[in-house]
Image 1 (cartoon, rainbow, N blue to C red):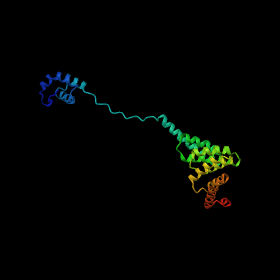
Image 2 (image 1 turned 90 degrees about the vertical axis):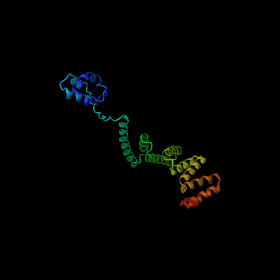
Image 3 (image 1 turned 45 degrees about the vertical axis):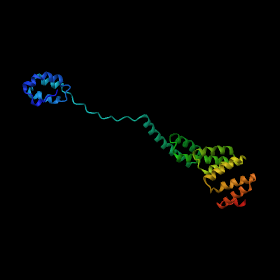
Image 4 (image 1 turned 30 degrees about the horizontal axis):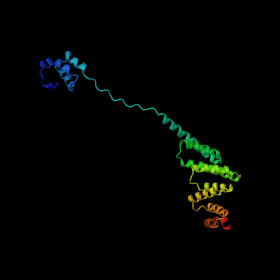
Length: 229
């Protein structure tokens, strides 16, 4: 309804009232219509009708209620609490030199926090000590098993390769022993004991020049037993 309502005479407004009523729901000037009708005939039925047809204001936008924690969030909180407990128990087990307990806790922690390099290293060290105890008991196959597990958690631990090579040597698996000594020296070229151990194997195999080179290098690095060879 395209009309200038401010300049319509009273009588004309009343005559056009039915048309206004028919169009008031689709006109954007409905608030003006209502004000005009109430101003001209405040007690008329038309004004009352227009009042009833006045659109309600839009409801306020409700605030988004806080969402309850998801199952994953609750699980994360539980995991964090559990990790704190296990880390505390891990430290105690290390002080007690309870290597089986350290390994068990370390592997449990890594199921929840697989990227924890510190726990990886500590678990590997526990396997190292278990392997060393087997070597001291002459149980070289069991020692190799422990050292192999250690390499999964700490692949850059040169001492593990040296000690596993030592166990392989006692089992007369010389090729594997040399491979492990090579691995140890690749990680630490100044590892005097690994040079010496590899030199012993080269000497056993009759490779005198390689044995001599390793013994000389071990001696330069300060390993006293190398002087005897």
